[in-house]
Length: 196
Image (cartoon, rainbow, N blue to C red; front, side, top):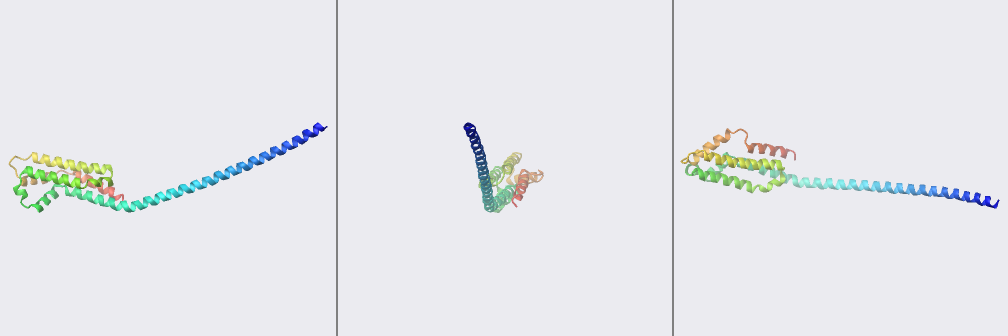
């Protein structure tokens, strides 16, 4: 009988322990869930704050970069306009009104190619503000213009003067259809519109 009382007491204590263990495990589970929930809220809040900070930085940087980029687009548009045969020849006439009458074809060709090269060299740094596609179009326009100048001078007779070269070149350029410079300028304008 003593033995049975012992087993009954032992079983009762064991049941109490099992119950206490279950309660303890339940409390631990609740604490773990609460800690995880708190961490999740903090993590989410931190991520939102980080996104907000990044957005603010981007917005502030856009305030600074957008005007610089717009100036770059303006400079590149001027570059494309200033490297047309009409503009380069008008600049030459304003610098030396007698140049077309007195210069030879090789002299005019050299002047045009040097002007073209100088304009592009002066604006080389603007490529960081435009897309690679637009910059490639601008470089293509430069290369095509240089090729055009060389090809036009090669078609002239050896005794031709700069005036004949200029006239021939202007006629051929105006009848060429859409030029690479016009294509580059159009794409440059389209890209600039995305900033506005």
